Image (cartoon, rainbow, N blue to C red; front, top):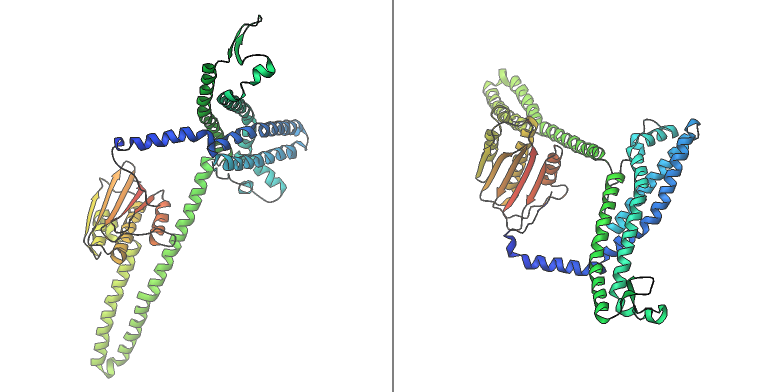
Length: 448
């Protein structure tokens, strides 16, 4: 969640700026740090790939061959464990040289169904990460060989041709030929780059190759990025499971906080008032025969306390789940919330059907929380609430003309709203520059 700043306007208003940035990037690419890091990555990939390929093939074939004995299981387990370590090394190398950060996959212990060495070995064999790491070690070797050959050939020839005017004198001095031979025959006839125009053309060709080579290497390393992310990172299913576990934790924490709030409100509000009411009625009962007038006054006071207790219970019930939301839907419920706001609020709800009760409830409480923030902190003179449906998403936008500068840091109400929305695959975006206006946009899944 955060504020997103975008530059709007017709593209023709900014072409010169874009041309300058692209031209500068192309011209500076050969000497940029990124180009040298990617070259270093390609150069180191080949020896690493050779070692990991030989090791993985050896361990897997040895372990598979020994499976008829008990030794095959530990050998194969050791090979897979080392392949996972190779995967960790490759993720670290991609992070350091390619600046490509891939999340750590699920650990082996997450799949263990018991304790001990055999449980760990079983989890290692069941883990898809282990076998994907092995597949990476096998597939990376031919690709690393190809990328190494292409990179070295282009890089070496590009710089050699670029500086050809500086070392062209080597050929007539030490090799007894006028320059680089492009073609020749057995009789000694050939074409050499020895005249000034030919030398200049060779240098210009080298300059073009120098400018192009970093982009070729960048394209090669893009394949490495895909391999690292696809084979060495967490699977989509595992990432989704972790996300759901995190969301479940947020939902549990929110529910626990709501329960504590309800308990506190009951203890400090309605419960305390009912206890006092019981004591007053007890005193009135004692006074009933001795002093009927005083008892009648005490009963009248108790009647007022009953009304206050009922109002507090209604407010508490409304905070849990308002009856108007269940009976009449979002439009009526949001209008009721807006009526309690300290500033005029325009409410527009454009829905052709009702979403799931959970989505309705989250939408209601999100608007309620945002309008409370406007009443307490915004110093606004007017606000608006808009709710509509786009495809399979429910959109919500709350805007005010207040002082702005709202933050969504940890511990704030907006951060809590963002966690609540995230628990149902929702999204909260805040745009609140200093001086206003403030716009909060929420997106929730539409569930019938």
